[in-house]
Length: 186
Image (cartoon, rainbow, N blue to C red; front, side, top):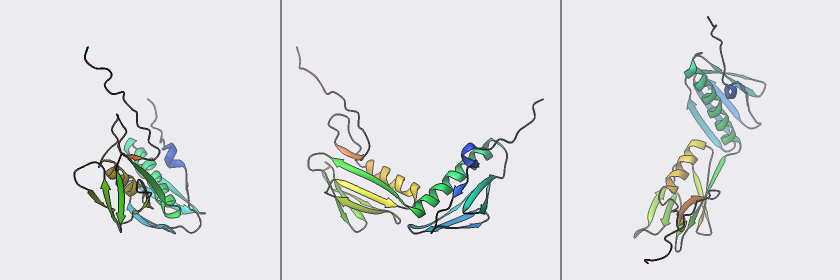
C-alpha cells in the first residue's frame, strides 16, 4: 500500500519577501500589513505564518487537498497585500464611442456612454480615480481585489460591443471585431 506523502503547494512553499517600509503584524489567523500606500487586514483560514529575516513563510495546518489549496491561496493573498501596501495597484480603462466621456467629481464618476441618461458610479473607499482627457480613467488602490472588482463593475456599465467597438474597455484589452452584414438582397 502506498504511503501518504505530505505534498505542499509549489506556490505556498515560496516565502513572501517584506520590503523596507512595510510592516506585518500577525495575531493568530489575523494579519495586518502596513506600508506607504495604505493598510490592509485579512483573516486567513487553515494556514499559519512564520516571520523571520524580512520574510514570511506560510505553513498549512491541514495536510489534505483542501489544505494544499489554502496553502497556495494564503501565500498569494499575503503576497498581494504586501505588494499593494508597498507599491499599490493601478487599472486603466478607456471609453470609446462618439460623444462618450467620463466626468469625475470627488469620488463620483459620471459616464455618458450612449444611454438616454448619464450613469453615475461612486468609487468605493480605498480606490482613487483620475480622468485624463475625458475618455481615459486611471484607478489606483492598495487592495488588489477591490480595484479589480471596481474596474469590472465600471466596465459592466457598457461593455465593448463587437461591431464598432463602442463601450468601456480596459486599456490593454483587445476587442475582437465582427464583420457586419455584407451585401443586400438579391
